Image (tube, rainbow, N blue to C red; front, side, top):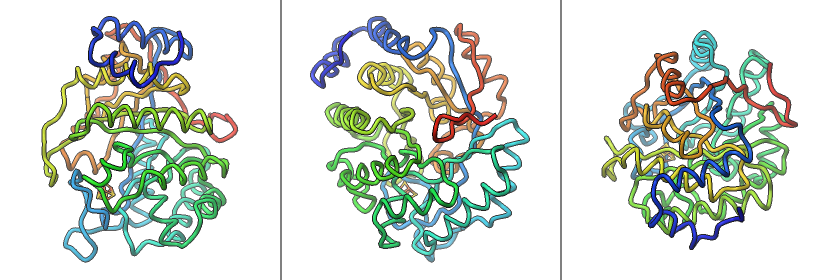
Length: 343
Ligand code: SF4
């Protein structure tokens, strides 16, 4: 099956039945993964600060500098959260916070070096999202290459493609005009790949984005992967509207699953398509039939929980769902750069 164009993707979305979409997505999935088999991780997002100057209108998490309720976690609080994750059988941390102008790049390098020193290979962590990385590099007046080298030298292996939502300049202007330009986002991610760190692609749907904007996001992602080969995976989740300035409604699980199928077919150069238990709960597992092959079981993410996400800590109960759909599930350890998998 050859690569599909944007026009063909549009036609698939508009005209093709669920059954045909599933079949086509499964065919691409089978190029990379054994049918009927899925992998997962147990992870925790650590939201180290909620202070942010970006003011995205879809965010229910942030407070402005000097407003009541702002926090920065202490080193001990971060360690306590990691210890709790280890006790629950997880081994992946994602650091994610606001654009806090009082935290310089050195704060991050010290924090990540201390996590690496304390936990060694027992824990892997996604140090930042590309969005936070752009902000930090700009504030430090460093090139993206220089900032990436600083993080890498502090022991960072991963900077994920989080904070991308919808990667079109029009979407950024409508909802997040102080966050970054799309061109900066990809320049930064390219520097991350070139520094030797790993990265991922993400997407969030369910705001007011058009079909063309979704397709533009997918095309930019596929082009970036053609150019760099640096994307380990693609994770899509859905917007939670509660408590946000933008408001709106949640999209259905069915729409999400069709989008996963479209992404699997379109992103023929990305190995892993990940489904979001954090935002879709039980519905996320149905996306395995639509081409996803991997998922997280998160135990905390304040950003999405503030906007309405519901976290279930009955991990065995959650794993019973994909099993009941006919999948074998296997724990996946985070990869280290160079392809080494932590034991
Ligand atoms: S989404 Fe992130 S960058 Fe935007 S306001 Fe919220 S914390 Fe800040």
